[in-house]
Length: 524
Image (tube, rainbow, N blue to C red):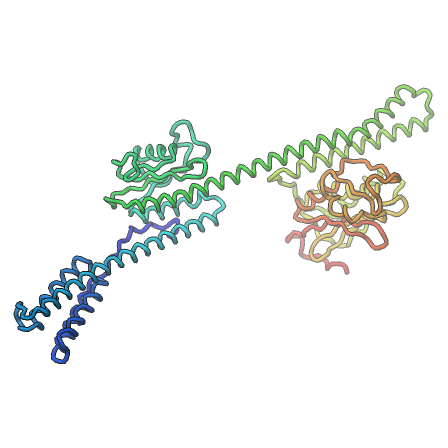
């Protein structure tokens, strides 16, 4: 296959060298002259027929037949009695000469036919290899349009002239619009008009096509299964009578490119459709989650606010304080649901850039501890941060949200007695942030599904409809957001069940190169 950036070679029409044929005849005559005293006339005739058969491998049929006729005349002159004359005394000698001439001509014609068949087979193999190589070139390309120079080179090698290509950039315009297509190569205005005509009708134009046969070039469409996606202009100045098989081969190369362009367009359309469907599904799921999970806290806030508004004079100070605390708690829950849901939608946006900066793990954990103790001051939350940790290259707001969600989950489902623990340490060159509890754990069937959006797992040993299962609030997006945040930072969030009961949600993050110098060894 000619490289895409290489100048295409002119078409080769190899002719076998005639010197070997002349050499065969020379050697045969030298042998016959040397052996005519020891061999009879029949054996000498066999040597001449053998020489004609060997020489026919290299000589054209007309030349071979003419040389055979001259050789038999010379054979008659030199070897057939009476020698050194062209007269023949015996009828059997005349029959021998006629037989030699007939056999030599038949051999010459058969060898010429075999040469043509061999040349045709060689040409078919070469074209098949060219199609295969171009197919592999297209297969390895993410964008088939980048292989258009390779198609130009392949087509130019067939016709011995530079080739022009017209590739559509999108949908076929109503009128010929140079801005709607990419042009490769040089052509005059009639050439470009012919390319547009071939593209619109999806048909070849030029000699042997039945359409505009007076044109000095072929216009071949780049056909897909549904429509044309481009066209190629092949000048025929170097081929006064181009064979139909050559056009069929050129059209096959063009169709390979057309099919590849169509597949690439279909892949892009399918990816866009999947992205649109995913966006619709996410939007519908968000709306469903919001409409369902906002009702309970809103109803609680509305009931508490109504009681304060309508019965404030009949409520004691303690009752009013409890109602106000309920409103604050439920409003905070609504805020967390909203933050998690919006963050999940934002992080799923393609090409999102995080606001990365050098952050201290101690400060991030401290922020999470303050928030947890403000929400539930009666619960115990401990922290253990390894000394001398390197700075993290991260988005501090997102990392705080990750740990805050994990701590909030642990406080909800980790039991009322045991404390929740936050640990940060180096482990195998990565920073591991873990939130641990001593709750009932998570059922095996849910240990991976809890990271899916809008899923809330069952405690170990409890069914989804267990009558004594505690009421759970939230849209089921907290852990999904946590894993998305971890992966956005090049890390991962996993669940490990603890010995003696409880869960350990562990987020591992890479250590940036600039911060790795002077970092302590990992804890045992």
